[in-house]
Amino acid sequence: MDLKIQEVAGLLSAPEKTIKRWIKKEGMPAYRIKKQLYFNRSEAAEWLLENNKAVQADIEKLFAAEKPVSIHDLVRRGGIFRNIGGNSPSTVIDHLVREINIPGETSREEIRKTLLQREEMMSTAVGNGIAIPHPRNPVISNIGDEAVSIAFLAEPADFHALDGKPVHTLFAVISSNARRHLEILARLSYLCRRPDFIASLEERHADSALLKSIEQIEKEMVSA
Image 1 (cartoon, rainbow, N blue to C red):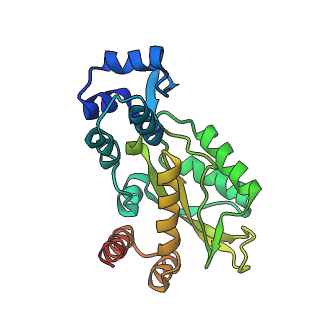
Image 2: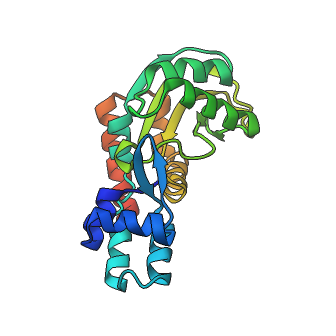
């Protein structure tokens, strides 16, 4: 989910009690997760327009409020980890989840299960010794909790990559909604096709050097 009720009320300059009335009496789509109300940005915008509850300028605020995806910022939040154990996708994921930063509202076991389920469906290896494990569906609701963790394996593991290369580096993705999830994956896919970035992973550059490289490549992407 994209937005909390406080955020929707602020963007629309409407009292929270008004938003709650729309939910209860008029069918505004909302989701209750652990006693907190959340809204899907697209669903909220569509409902507001159809029910004449907001002008176009307010609708645009809903989408303007969404933070742009920055892999650099997501990795700073998720962390960089080294010497992750395991010799198969399942054992690597077990070791990975013990180490990475997990949002407070989500359990490590939930993350582990969703990562394993996704891996069982299809390998997340993208070639060049890299895999991008991620839950099939978003498991958090707050954009501020999104993260990408880089994990270097103690020993390469067979993730059944199409190019046949064993995996030495993982990018574990925790995203908040489908649209951002796809954008994060697209950006990571671009990064992981860059020969210079692949080399920095193979050489296991220092954390600061990796972050600087990601930041520079993202700047190039924006200016391209």
